[in-house]
Image 1 (cartoon, protein in one colour):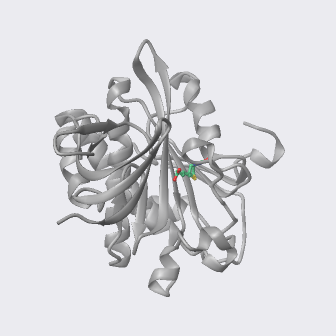
Image 2 (cartoon, protein in one colour; image 1 turned 45 degrees about the vertical axis):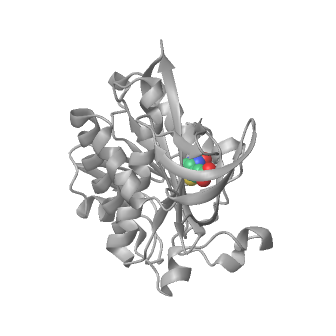
Length: 295
Ligand code: BTN
């Protein structure tokens, strides 16, 4: 791992749980609590829980790059109570204060082409939305491609990072950041306008251990569906949970800004934007701003 502060405080395996951190906090992350509510066969059966990491994705990518015989199994979950260099898409900083949120990275080894990898982000977004809806009854929706929003404010983000060998995915890490019990007052003013947390929306704290278990249950179910049935069922659910489709949107892409009606997602999860009467753009990466509903 990455030095003294990165030694796992708890390494939880199904048959061998070692809780090295004792605290009076009731909302501390605990592998035992997560495992109690887990219904998976491989996702989160091994959990590495750290007090502080630079980034759970960075650590998970390092672990995943080693051979499975060294012990890093598919489904391994890396958690941290805080991150010092949490990052999102386009290298943006992900604010990661201790003890209130979820910073999670899950290692998977799907046999899919690099082209289909964005569908895994879609899959993770639907798993997050369903966990929020089940546990909080809040109307969470997806803003293409990877934001989970409530009342147009961001509550969660997903960053999928890949290890690629000859155009095939060798391993991938799904990084999920969720503002759970964060007080938005703790955020810088400009971010407070566009970000929220589950607690801020519900006016009630959420049990992070149970939430993580729900999320992993949802994720494994959808991942197995992807492997058995391909991308179509995942994208069907994604379409039903995204607020982007049907809206007039502005999209900030690496190549410039586009405006139009968000029509659909293509079979690889790319956004199909109608920019004129018969003009369509296929957008693989960008930031979407929802402007208004289209008539
Ligand atoms: C985004 O909205 O751009 C994605 C944000 C992803 C943040 C999570 S927090 C856990 C994992 N570790 C990271 O460094 N990033 C992801």
